[in-house]
Image (cartoon, one colour):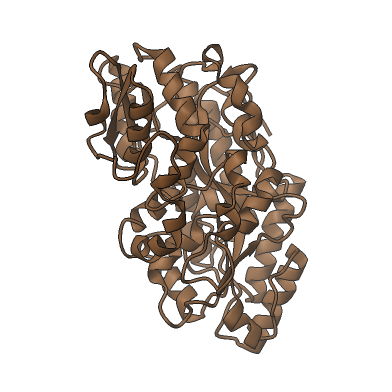
Length: 463
């Protein structure tokens, strides 16, 4: 079976990291100084170099590493300084397809592929099905299983095999404009989705020009993160030729009808794919048109570059409604070792250190990387409950609520054809935004299309 994932659009966490290279990174830097490189054992401050091989020792085993996280060279530098027998050369790539296309081409040609590369959780199965990734279990990766939240570890392992090391994630929360909403009679974030609906009706009645939020049907990853929390995950894949696709089951239809009812009542908007670069959604958040955003832990930082005095200091990153029992994840990356690697043991040692050591994580949570951990020791670190950014209400934290709910995210499996799915959501959602298609109809179309595609790819499909 041949699979080509070459046309995948960038993950949303990639867009966050790009934005943080500019104005928002400057705004965040002051609040992050307490978590700087001086915390890194075995490496002194001011020892970072973008030319990561400058710290390599003569005769060290060469490892090539591709990725796109800003500031990743810092972690690589520390590794090279503390592991003199291995030399990691970090090559910066454009996130998403900017890396995946040359990577797939190199793996197919058996020439020029890196030993390790950044691969998003939802894309990893595309490399698994082509047998391009190495089982890390023989290299001791299994000893780290309990160091990660369960959902993250389950997405990189199957039937005793470990296909990558998990790193960052995107535990969901609710960005809430407390300043504007308190004036409309809603002073605290909703703790349940029924309360979310009631608050949406209350707000829109008080100010018909304001909306509690917007349903971004065109962002398939965002929709899936909410479906994950709702127990309505549509995919099951066991690593073989069988796949389940279910967008029209009871839980899935209940999810679709809940959001469609909010659209029908006019209490939330449905005019934007909220997270595309040409969308006015973020200006609308800042201007008071949209007053909440169910978003990933990294979402507020992405929005920060749009914030002006109109809403600065009015926001809190609350828990996602209903997350006392279940939450969702949006975004995050893994680090596999590829089958073309000549030095899999050394590559595995690097991937394990990068993702499962406090040395690495003490840097990774700082600007400009700002990764949200799936590594439990870092989730419990003081930074997770104290880190703040200027757009938030004074005294409130950026990661505190997502960190609390990250362990409550249910485990799911991604299918090995996420590129096609994400492209399909973009195409079908245009009809939803135009008002010619409901969310239940949208789900039915996705069901039919995905089943047809999966069968064409040679999968045995259950529904």
